[in-house]
Structure formats: structure tokens, C-alpha cells
Length: 480
Image 1: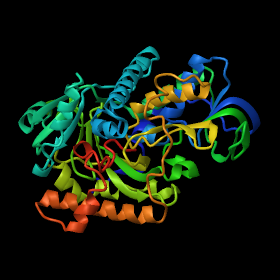
Image 2: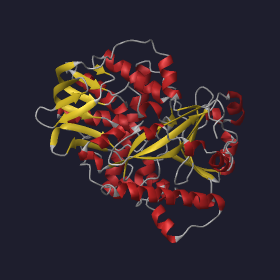
Image 3: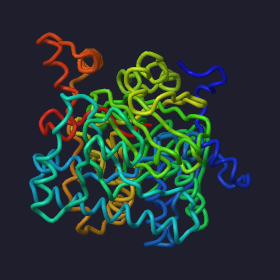
Image 4: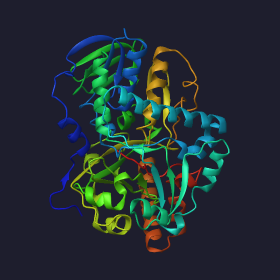
């Protein structure tokens, strides 16, 4: 249960970032019709990185970005701020693309993360980046031993980001209890997500990108040249970039490729003394190994963030208001007592918020043109892990827009968005059943109970993270 003064549906990250800005009317809504070289739809990480890269490579381009609310209002400004690579999905990438290609993708994302950090340093963006790692924690005996095979597989190629830790070592370092063992990615980290996206917005404006906030996409004419229609105008353009995250499900070409689910995060009041005493002030971002995964991390301001998948699920790609009111599971007192208290007792939410994310079947994003529309490119399916990979997405989309193929556009992530999910309403009904089964399995694991054969079979469909290369990824570790 939330504390009596909990502020629900308020994004602490974005409020904090906006409070530190000097208000300026530099991104007015589009009013009327105009022409542009490139139109980017979406003011999050992917859209802004692409805009900045385009202006860096071709300063004379007229680049226009439209955003339905303000830049950072969506998943880029309200996620848990996990700065992760894709090595935890190495087995999935290897199965899908082959070993060499999986390594190439992983290294490209690694490079993008280094570029992100350097970009923030060079441009005065204080995104509160802390490279304290990412810990995948086993909290039940059933969850222990999920990762050694993957660690060994990567080590054979001199890729060694991971360190195995015992529960005793984890407790000694960060004061986290109830963990049997863990896998620490030493190269990962966490940040203030809204400060990053708002910093990218500032740099994009400084480099000559035209931004129209409070401008909703109402239509997309797939002709040559394409036309982007909005609520109060239109833009004829040579190229269109779709960077809409969950709202990409509005497009029929992407609807069968992604599933839109909810994720919720909460923030405690400041408790810097406690975090210093336990060591968690310098702790990693943490995920446990339940199917419906829990997130836990410290903030630079001495707070603790914790997160959990919600229950909202889009039907037919329609993202409605239920995603903004999806914190009940996160704040459930019994769930917190059973799942969070063993790690860090007494976490109380001072703020809680939720929103949609786009999930692909295998947890990997897809970049490329919309089928049948070579002048419209997209990046979709980040599955809650986009803070790091979005940097790669911006570079890939820039090369696709400029029609300059390179080693990045040849990566396996540049592929058609296959219809990996069944049509509606089968997908909506089936996903509900699978998630219910996953929750029952989590309860059984927690309480040393058992579930039936049907529940077991359904639960296998949701994911088993790094342990299972066939079922796909579990619920997002970082969320929206």
C-alpha cells in the first residue's frame, strides 16, 4: 500500500527535470502546412538522437520533429533509468542471427552507450549517470543458476562484462538481503531518464532542429513524397522517421510485431543516510528473477526507485488511459511484503506513475523501412530496454534516411517487422492468460507451492530471461 501522501500518476523524473529548466516557448505546436526534408514523429530518445545525428551529418537538412505532448512525456522520460547493453539477450540474438552477428550487435550497443556518456559530458547534460552495474538476482532456489552457460559462452569470445556473486557478497556490498546469488554486469549503470531526454531536446534545438510539441499525428500518407498530417496542419517531406514507442502500434505495419503492455514505477522519499549505511547509495540497478520482474535501484538524490509490470494491455494497438492508471500491482501491500521486503524492507512510495511500453516477441528492437513504404523508417520493439540501444537506433535511422548504407545498417536488427503475435482478439485473450499463469507461477515459487500442468505450459510462453533462449524475454527489467 502507498503511504497516505503518495502522489499517484506523477512522474517524479520529469517533474524534477522540468523544474530545473528555464521555461521557453521554443517548440510551439505546428499550425498550418509546410515542407521539410525529414519529419520525425516522437520526441523521445530515438527521435531526438536521430534528429541530432541528421543535423550533425547534414547540417543543411530541414529536420522537423513533432511530439504529441512534450519531449520526454512518454517512456523516455518515465522509465526506470537502467542503462543496459544487450549481452543478457546474447542467446536470443545468437539463435536468431547467428553467433558472429549477435556479437556485432552487442558491441554496437556497447559503443553506443560509450557515445551516450561522452555526448552528455561534451554537451553539459547532467543525466546523473552512475556506472554501478546491473544485478540480476536470484531470490528463490528455482531461480539460481540461470546464467553460467551464457557467461561461459560470452567469455569464449573475450566478452566478460559479468561477475557472479554469492548472496553473502551481495549483502556485504549493498545491504540487500534475501538474495541467493546474482550476476552483476559491471559495464551497466543507471541515470535520470528525463534529464537525458530533456538534454537531448536542448541540443537538438541548438543544432537547428525544429520541434513542434503538443502536435499529434493524425494521418500518414504513404506516397512519394510522404505527407504527415497533424491536428492543426500537415508536412510534406522526403523522409519520415517513426519513433513512437508504444504508439507505433497504431500503424498496421507494426501492430502484429509489437504488444503494448504497462509498467509502473514508484519513488520513495529521500533516505540518503540509510543508503549510505547499507552501501546501496553506490549500488547497481537490480532485477529479481520472477516472471513478473521487480526493479530496484538507488537514485543520485538518495531515493529508491522500485518498479513492476502493470496489468494494462492494448487491444488492437489502442493505447488508452488505463496505462496511466496502472499502479495497483506495484503498490499492493502483500506483494511488497513478500517480494520487496526481503530485499530492502519498508519501501514506501512517495510518487508512483505508469505508462505503456512496446514489446517485441523476442525482446529485440527492429529498425528499417515500413513494409511497402521505403521513405518511412522506424525503430520499434525496445521492450523496456531502450535507454542504451536507442543511441544505436539513432545512428541506424540516420543512415537509412540519408541512404548511406554502412556496417550498422547491415546489422541483424535491421529487418522487416514480422507479424510475430497472433491477430486480435486472440492475442489479447492469450496474453491475459499467459500473464495470469506467470503470476501464479511467481506465487508458487514464492510460497514453495505448485501449479498445474496447464499453468506451467502457459507460463513458459512469457519468458525465462537469460535462462531460456526459446521462450523469449521476460517482462521488461526497466519498464516505462
